[in-house]
Amino acid sequence: MSDMRIPLFPLQKKSHFIVFCVATAVVLVFSCLLAVGIGAADVSIDEIWKVIVNNVVGSEVYQREWENSTESIIWTIRTPRVLTAFVVGAGLTLCGILMQVLTKNPLADPYVLGISQGASAGAVAVIVYGFLSFLGGYGTMAGAFLGALISIALSLRIATIRNKVTATQLVLAGIAVSALFGALTNLMIYHTAVGSDKVKTATYWMMGSLSGASWDRLLYASIAFVACFVLILFLSKKLDVLMLGDDVASTVGVDTGKLKIAIIIIATLLTGVIVSISGTIGFVGLTIPHITRSIVGTKHMRLVPASMLVGGTFLVIADILSRVLVAPEELPIGVVSAFFGAPFFLYLIRRSNAKLGR
Amino acid sequence: MKLSIENITYSINSKLIVDGIDLGVEEGAFVGLVGPNGCGKSTLLKNIYKVYTPDEGKVYIDGKDLSQLSSRDTALEMSVMQQENVVEFDMTVYDMVMLGRFAHQKMFGNDMSAERKIVADAIEEVGLTGYEQRSFLSLSGGEKQRTLVARALVQQAQLIILDEPTNHLDIGYQYQIMTILKNQGLTVFSSIHDLNIASCYCDKIVLMKAGRIVDIGTPWEVLTPQKVKDLFGVDCQITTNEATGRPNIVFAPADSVAWR
Image (cartoon, rainbow over all chains, first blue to last red; front, side, top):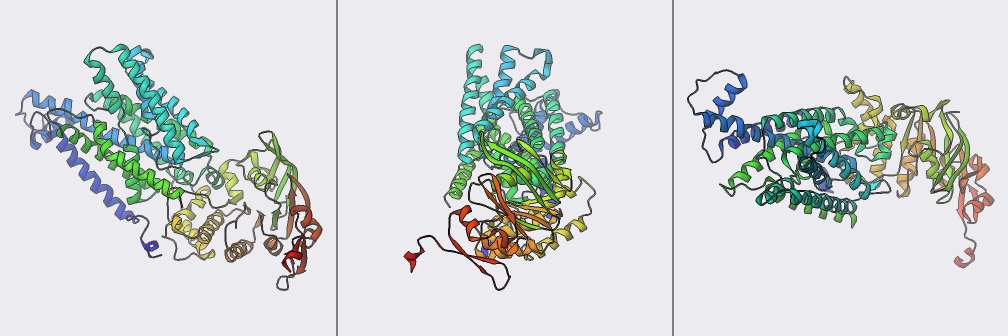
């Protein structure tokens, strides 16, 4: 009985929650600076600061005493990459939270459910066969969104039995859907790419990579991310209620039908956009919300901003590791995130099995 | 009539579960719904609280057609307490009860001190003061159920529907929860398994069998040996409960000779 006295989660006070967010933000800023500094070409913190300030302000605040190549490494290559890492990590985390509320199951995330793989297949189909070319630069994102939409419909269909999503069913649905779309992606790539390009492109879409990051793509992704983030905050009270189950939520006053459609659209849109700029990076949406929930609790008004910060920071650090661990080579970032995420996934499965056995 | 049900018909996989039920519940009445397993009690209630949409028929609260009300407006008219369902995500007792305020709260600009007072009062009403920061999932069955009663109370609807509210609870909790609900002076429509509890708390009892209502009346009118036998197939004797003055059902299986 004594364990009941332990608070459910440590940071119940609002002030503690704010301190946690600020601390995470500080870690985030340092990780970003570190991430911009690390790489084949050495640049100093001083130079990073000056280049970024100059570019952000748009004039020479600091007199320029570094080479053009340093400027372009910092501003054109590494900065967008690091910011992309943040947006991808934060975005995948939000997708995970949405999938978990939708299925009322902590095992759900876009990767586990096969939605990321569906988005990949959609993006590759657009790139390889030129569908949706009338959309120009948005074509890949639109393709990824459509792929995500098809795969989420499929996987929720398989996972839902009598209006309930059980852990077993969810995992099985995820395996089936991700295998299907993964195979499709590979088929399309091997059908068209040549030589070593095949492996490279396939790895990109299956394991994720941030090496293609650019300011343009970052901009599109950020707009989608910020829009989704704000929408989710607006829905946060409804998400709290939906966690209790569809029936209960509707009797408490939530229009569950509309809410679930909104969740599906936001989650697939965000997944599509993220996958189109980074490929499939697994387990972020699973691990981060779970850890953050155990620190700040389940209320979405707090969970969403806090885990967005944690998720973004996590991926910035994962990106550093992916560049450092086998330097001068670069590991696909999905490998790094899977090393953290997969054991976590196993732990959650064990826990849900233990619950069934009680 | 607080709650009027007109010709509710509902079938699952073309099997008729609720067969054209008409029923009225008066303002302030505590009405029990009694019947054997699978007779359609829960399905009828789900048709009332809009988890199911009836194939035919309408439900009115104070003359308002429920199917025309939004989820939020419905929640302001009617609160529902179901059996405890399994939730995967834990939260504190306080937060759980606060979720019952959803329909009253706007996106911004809520008077949070008033909201907190309502929640604290409900928690006190169900005897859980001091439990506010406990984890909901760590509670015992009775404590969980009382938390859900508090959540239904903060909804401040005049009608409360109970879908097997005391299942799986030991006898002490069953009486405790029914007493709390009875004391609120609300209109209550509840399915009840235990005939003695129904007898003790209900102003009227509705007997249901095979998707139809077979009788409605006061406990003394409907809890007769013959009607109980027709409904459940068990013989019983009816005595008077000295404490409540209401019928007390003592079951006597047909071959009770064997126990002598």
